[in-house]
Structure formats: C-alpha cells, structure tokens
Length: 233
Image 1 (cartoon, rainbow, N blue to C red):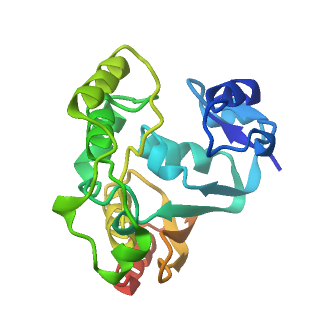
Image 2 (cartoon, rainbow, N blue to C red):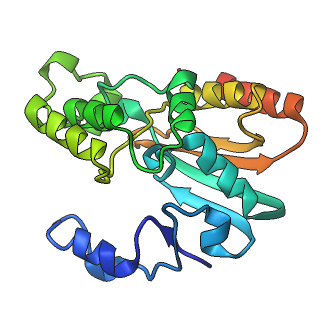
Image 3 (cartoon, one colour):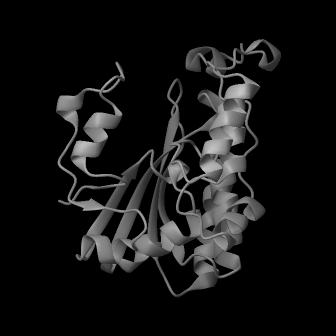
C-alpha cells in the first residue's frame, strides 16, 4: 500500500498543528508527494487499485488527475472514489460543476486551485446541518456563511500569487457527477467506465463510485448514463 498526498508528512503535520479537528498522530507516512510532477513519476509504481476518499473534489485539474490515475493502474486495475454530496455538506449553496469548469482548469494546466474557484469556495461555504438537509428543513437564505467577502477576496489574491488553498474545486451530486463523466468520456477527455455505484445513503453525505479504464467509449458512456438514471434525484 502506498500513500500519496500533496505534501510530505512533516509538512502536513505542521500545516494541521493548530487544527483541533485533525489528529496529528493519525497522519500516515506519505510515500509520494504529488505536486508539480506527474503521478507516475512521483510514485514510480503501478497498482491494482486507487482509493481516493474525498479527494476528487479537491484536485485543481480534474481531467489531468483522472488521466494520471489511469497511468499508474495495472491492466484491469480500478479506482474507488468516495465523493461528498453537495446537498448535505457545506457546499450546499454552490453551483454544481459543469463541463466548461473542468475544461477551463485543464486548459490552464492548473496544479493549484484557480483564484476564481478559491473565491467561490471561500465566499459560499456555509454551516449545514446534514440531518436538517435530509429532512428538507434548510432555508438557503438563513444559512450562515463561514467567511466574509473581504476574506474570500484575500484568499483569491493569494491564490493568484501561487499560494495553495485547500478548497473544494468541484461540487457534485451523484447525478451531476455521472452526467459530467458522460460529457468527459463522450469528448475523449476521460477513458473510464462506471463499474459500481452506491448512492448517498439516508442521513449521510457521500456517495461511492468505481471506475475502470476502457477503450470502448460507447459502453463507457452508457455505463455513466445508467448511473445517472439510478440516482435518487
């Protein structure tokens, strides 16, 4: 088993030293730092599975990220993703990610979150009671934002200078993730089919997706359409 992160263990410990929600003793030893270098170069290994729990929404360039994951899989290898569902998280007020969003980041060759994405995240992240969201008891206009516009602008300005802000670059529900994958595969920007899907369970806030590289674009597109149709809207 290999652990990959955007920084080494010492850097992560320092980063989260003052965060009461992070158990520093639980931080694992990072085997490969994936930053400016391609993943295949950073890891220097091929693997049977990639497991990424609450990672995909953080990556600055989703298209390149998926491509780099494919590059380290052995034949028949698969990816397992755990993805937060916007409807039950602090992304509640944010617009769901569209094809043009991820294509633009890909064209910019983003290796850190783009400034306008940092601005959107910091400005619109809110305090959400997941249980109330499931009960349909939330009112968007009453939700409390975590940050001010001034703070959001300051973070975006730092991002323009290359400062890495760990934000949710992408926002999904199960159906919109499936629909985005339909678009990416249809346009040849991704090579994966959906191998399994577990919808967001009641009173939880994440869904699970399996992906496998394939050369059959038609079958891959159909697999994502099947996932989309299976989602509870």
